[in-house]
Length: 327
Ligand code: ADE
Ligand code: ZN
Picture 1 (cartoon, rainbow, N blue to C red):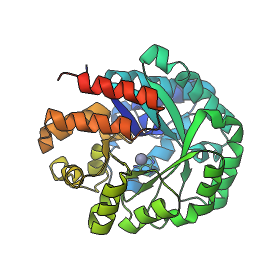
Picture 2: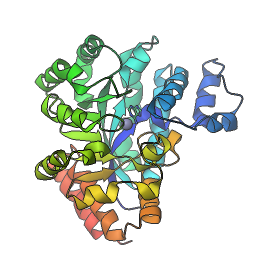
Picture 3: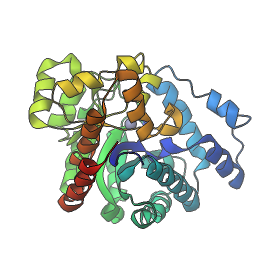
Picture 4: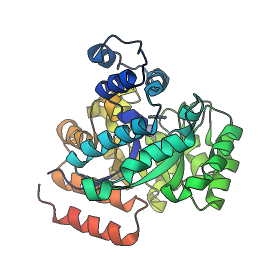
């Protein structure tokens, strides 16, 4: 069994495997603009974040009913359990669904119907993180937050994702302040393709408690010192960075430099269906291509629980499991 770990950077829509996409398309009477599963997988060759997002949003069209969102989440949980995941904080993109006529109730009720039993059936505790699409207006994000109010007991945090460059965190200052007022935790994608200044903005203007990706912090030594001192976690996604060409190869990934600088680094899968592997596959990739040893993998697993929003008791229990794990 793979080492116990938390997954803190996973977009549920990014777990849509081609087989499930075709199955849901059939069920909903939709014709996909790809001949078959193999042709679709062949389309998974990206040049940057936007080239991926184009396909990611296109394929979401197959998600129409509560049953579709249920099946998507259930398929992810089944795979995650096999990868040693014991806790998952799961991003979802409401605006990508409401914008094409699928209601927020359909999305959340469908996801929740799988997540509500995941602890019993998969031994995985879960929560949802509602992400705002940063390439849409801030007013739309605020409307989305307000519409989500009846569902807040299912949602632990808000996040910020989609096309980063040109959509700085400062655009969402008011929305994140409103989310904090509602008692939600805050995270944000920053420093994936965007500059280190976006990470500063996420911290200082949005009150982000974790930075998703954040690898470009290395361009700003003062920021690295700040992240080391505050232990604000980074949710790093190595396979994603290579597939979206933020990093040339896995062997060039800056994860060892981030760890050596004393940052609270976690490893995650981002959009595993599109990027060639789930979270433990990322751990294994780091072992193989960057020579991480088993104690470094244990540190990453420990960090994943430390960086989570878990209540202290379950966090302690899971950390003890990591410490007792034998490779
Ligand atoms: N949405 C899904 N995956 C994403 C990523 N890696 N960056 C920004 N937005 C995303
Ligand atoms: Zn992401």
